[in-house]
Length: 280
Length: 282
Image (cartoon, rainbow over the protein chains, first blue to last red):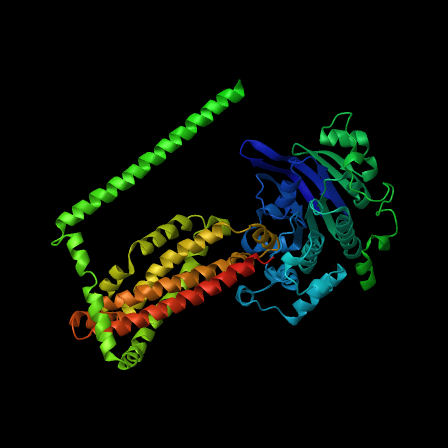
């Protein structure tokens, strides 16, 4: 589906992402872990073309998406929706408009200048909000919502784009454990119900283990681990994070449940938020 | 040891700063004193001798206005159309200038992804537009286009575009880039990003500066009447030029001008307060 070929990004003399090559051939939920500054965000931003790559190729459906320009590039950006750590909504616009902005790429510039969205767009946006269980907030300003709610609006905007894949750049890093669970459940549900690739940068190992089908570990811009989450032992984690014997991940774990409550292994319906499950 | 050395350094730094402040203050006083003595030498009469005659002319105007009695209010109403003409010049000029300023600001701020090579060009353009006072541009245009409100309107709009464009561009510098990035990631075009990620953030500040500029432009338009651009300024020039006898009319124009400007100032500062307040509400 998507194939990375020695993708590299230099910032001046520093190499943030160094010759990264791997292939995602099934609609997996992929977690990328690693220290701050390991190049996780840069890698994700290169896929969405927010950050230009220095060299390498990313092939999707036979096309090198790093060479796309202009309208073709924006069309690709629509196809790979991005969710950010800081949500990146427009604070002063209401929630439903924020979600409909996911459709901007499909709209003529003239129409969008006058804030004209069709009834169909409004319905789709409301359905996306309903799926994430926050349709009752549709008319509030985005800035009035809590962090967890804002992140769900951002995911609804991503759904509105009707993308091939969803990229999430540390989506739960600024959320409390409860909201983190709701957001991760929502991403997992998108993966399972819509059969989409979800690539997710994560800071917590237990989240990666519980939600992802595949984990990629990065260190200093290089891929140092790539495999199923079962293989992610404490020794491997020490290797990825460059930590010594004193490293104990339980100390910083954000899980509320006991560590064995893996969402991935239970039945798929369990991965949904209560509200999302009610819609089905 | 290190703390003692740091203390010495901070103390000497503070002393040096105080010295600089003192030198600055002395310079200002010296400039004021020399400027006064210079201009006093050049004037035909002395400043102090002239001071006693300062209130003669206003006294005369007030006396004539008093003698006019209730007819004075009739005079005020008589000049309302001229005042409206001035307000018209200011209003149209602020609208046109503001629209131009919006375009210029969006084309000259790196923070909103303006096209790189264009930024310095547009910035210099705005500098030039700002550098010419309305009066100079209006004099030139009246010479070319003849005496009418249109040259005044163009002159004020020209200056407004430069002045507001600079302020708008500074507002753009301070916005949050996260919404822009969010919309980029959705595949939104530049215009769409400006419309949905930039405008909602800057609108309250833009409106506030726009109203402030409207206030300034009402005063500027009144002055432009002096060079033949019509409106209340032209009437004022006529009545002042006639000297004695037209004092009541001059007073009526002064009162009208004063009331109008005060009204606009009050309304606009009230609206601006509300705008900024709503921005802070959440």
